[in-house]
Length: 224
Picture (cartoon, rainbow, N blue to C red):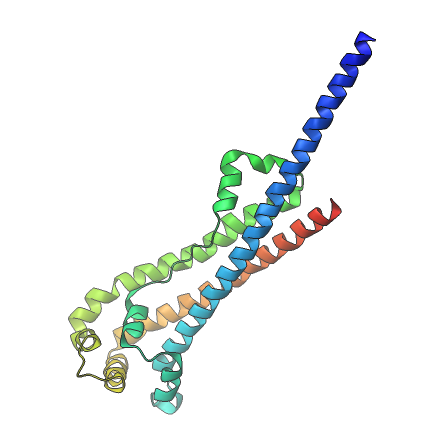
């Protein structure tokens, strides 16, 4: 009877641990799933902003019939500060990953039994993320060189941003003239355009891993 009681006690204890582990597993997966939704929303916002940056840049680099299209630019922005910000400030890529880092740091990833989910998580938050981050860093380095370049070679453009006597159309003409008459300026913008394109390509790769993770988590949760 004593042996039986001990056996039952051990069995009940193991059963309780199994139930607790299963609850922890579901909580971890559900937390990751919620974060996937948040990251997807963030990526949609980043893509829209980067696409708008490319469209704006293309208006200056590749004007239709060689003539700046003021209406097309006005459809993208009507702010001098918005244009100057694009030339001088790089766009960060900082998706919400607090839940993932918390799960990693706490060791709760051990509750996830699916090796496929672990592999996708590693690929998403390390490999795919680093690709986007690398292009962001290259863009950052290029744009950090812009301020001394513009202030030295094109002070008129810098001064016009805060000059209320220079309206938006005149501001666009100043910028267009600077780009078309300065090969170094144009070359810098072309390099930024390339990095923006590469950044979007890697963002697409990142989002594919994100979609794959979302699908796999849903499958595992549905299986119970």
